[in-house]
Image (cartoon, rainbow, N blue to C red; front, side):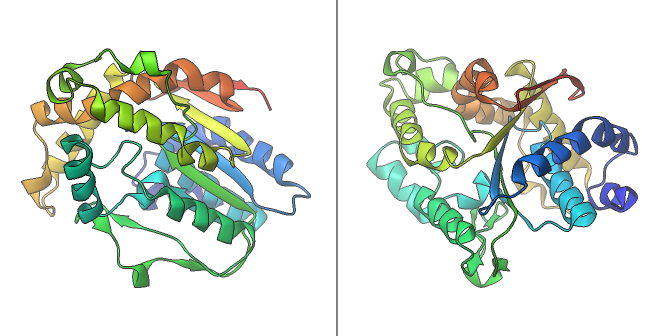
Length: 290
């Protein structure tokens, strides 16, 4: 594998090469062992809160497995299955105004995700959905990548991938300012939890091997997201109109607090590999069950 090329492509520091060699190459080798002799793709789930590094890990696994072992790897993000603006606007009118904001369960096209997986598993000609966050809509379907064979691996990454729903009594008390002020009756969070309990679980049950990048706490999500916004503000070539203030970031991440905290409490026990992160996103420990 051309690690220097990978670092350059993803604008990563040279220190990432050591991290990959220590933690991620062994993970890739474990995945290979599980894939041996399989007649269908090995489906890998990667969970991590915003800014934890799950997209980079996904890219590394794809690059490593394809270049070193000539494996066919399809990478998908739960973000690629977001509903378009008009569908979310309809949900916001019909169910609750907070559903205009993409992110939580209920704002994804899960039937499309399930159909995409079915096509990949059976080797059909498959268009891979892609979402354009700049326009807040999916890319036109003619621009979606197409795969015409059954892959060896399918990687699904996302902040809520693999997470189970909460018990109904856990959803009732608000846990932050957003829920208390903008969802006082609990309609939004109950809808989100019900959605998570439905076809999302059908999708997550397809996962053969679950990985988690485990943050120390939800507090890191705000700090890591803030770092991303500040870095964007320093770039000269982007449109700054979409950059959030510190206060807007604080409000935005509250949409994800409930499920993220639930994931930090419950998901590690259901994972095959858990990488525990410190406040600077360094891996300080791993737990491997298979």
